[in-house]
Image (tube, rainbow over all chains, first blue to last red; front, side, top):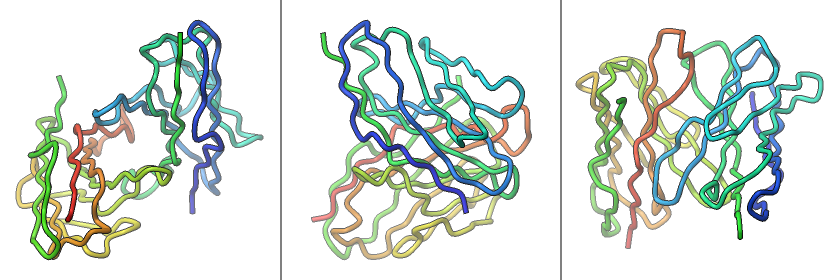
Length: 114
Length: 115
């Protein structure tokens, strides 16, 4: 069975500072990895995804993530955050079989202050 | 622009009531999903459907049922609502074909309160 761990439930950061949101997964098969963002009172929106190929994935709003197979990690990074990045971020994993189900982590709340 | 809509943003029901949550997608997607979202627990899959009239249990199906009579519509049913079903409910859809493999598109959510 697959699982996703987001160790940080909340990450406070100042505006224009860099940020890293951590995600580790476990799976016995090849995986696809995703980061979603949820702004207040909204549904989830895809930030970026890793399916295959280059391990460095660039997404929307200046975010990027690096797939590290040996460490089973897929950490999300942004070099300089804005107030508008305040949101909850979810890491998710899908295997390459079955019905394309996603398993989500518990989420990390990013709080950007001026 | 792709769109998943949910019938209500906020809903308040009484214990024991039968509750219907509706989800409609306009992207001709084969797969549809219902999740509940609770603080500290993330998103948990309740049920999903990969075709009309087909359904599969997710991780927490107890107390819920679903219906998919048309491709674009996926309904979540709480047969007898209980207070522990107070939660945010999110619907999602995805195409079966690869290309945009496994990406799910989400609706805005329904915040259900059961009193």
